[in-house]
Length: 268
Image (cartoon, rainbow, N blue to C red; front, side):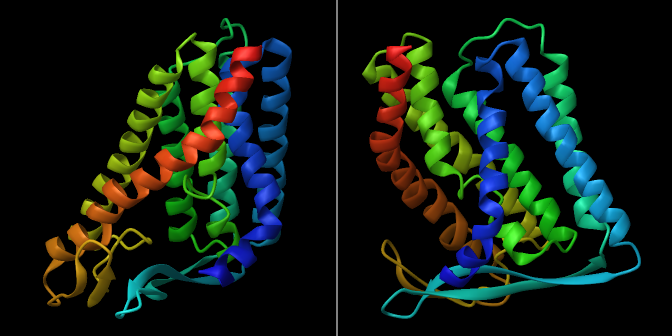
């Protein structure tokens, strides 16, 4: 997995800035929102230029996802599918995403600013970014771009805003912890639900776990699966890791980063 994160590093400043702007949009006034619109509009234009320049070329992406294998539970990247696409497809898909965000924020420029519901809003933004990653995968984006996008890579920022907006809505620390837990459950439940359909219907993307033949998990030990055991693969490859392990990781991370965001929000 480390090699994919290394590939993502050059793209992280842009993707994490985009995530931050999306999370920040409800809290800033008209001037701030216009600046966010400008950022996404310029991004869309740049991506369209890239799409035009990439017309006529062909790209390939090996969609992979790391899973723990063996008694030592060492992470191993499993090949899900190989996507072949025209070179213009992924930048155009990303441009459409940026344009939609720009239009949504522009449409809200005269709406009163304030703190949105922390759990639901942050889960919505996380889902949008996860959806963008899935679209990029199906359109053959570079490996680094794919791994620099999604809800998990931006998790520290997301939980910080859960804390920040909890404080902005005058919630005490206990209410913040409830919001943090609700966010963690909602974010992972949405991913888990999509992974069910991706696996059962063989949609591909990194959430399709049909290729798994064995897993080693701290909760279930080593497990082997028959080729047609899609439900078992989904339960042990997606449901339990997402709804138990990732929820716990999100909550613990939120106790640190989210609490810092909560304190910052209380001082405003």
